[in-house]
Image (cartoon, rainbow, N blue to C red; front, side):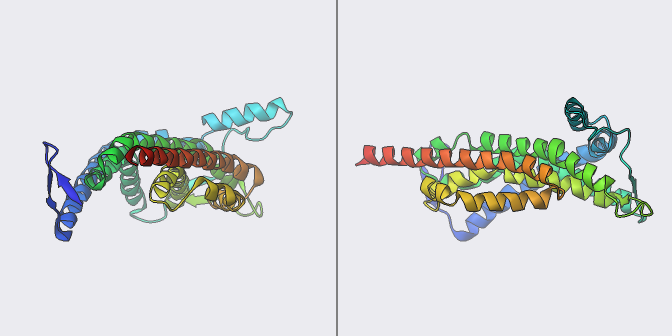
Length: 278
């Protein structure tokens, strides 16, 4: 990999140790951003927990109100409740403090995601050709948009479906649902982060197409297998009811179709570039 100077002139080839040193500083700067934003989240404890973490437990959560109104239009009473039938408790001495720390770190990672992607791009960009850098200018914006869209989808769709189903499920009335704080937060964290990562599918397909591992024909050929994988993934990150799995699977399948379109566009641009250079 060559490193370019500020004047655009290539410097000497970097050694393996130079690459490691460069990577180390990118990781350090990313870590500093996560820690700084994590500290801000730690200070904003009231907003993070009462306004974000525990909001999906409330009947006033927008998703419940929308689903309740939609259900009543067809004569059902689903998702209409005053309070979910479970309580949250902390059974260890340091339980609440640990939850505070790790939730703040998670919030720092989510908010710092664009900067983390920026540092990653800065690390790999010197190894790209000029036309590749030009074509990847929107990478940070696209990756950040997809990630935050996935996070919002996980928070407003996957999380309330999971909490409503798991929080009200009982094998017997003699068993009370009293969930540990860490278990409750883990459910939200898994739903949000998993959705954010899954929504990166178009970005992954873009790069796999660039390096020749994936083609539109390949994606179309194995569409049926992709459907099975998406349904399995939906079953993992959602409660085991068909409606929730379909709700999660639909946007992922749409992303898969968008990825086919993106893969086709990448190959078209590569073909045009080859004709110009011929």
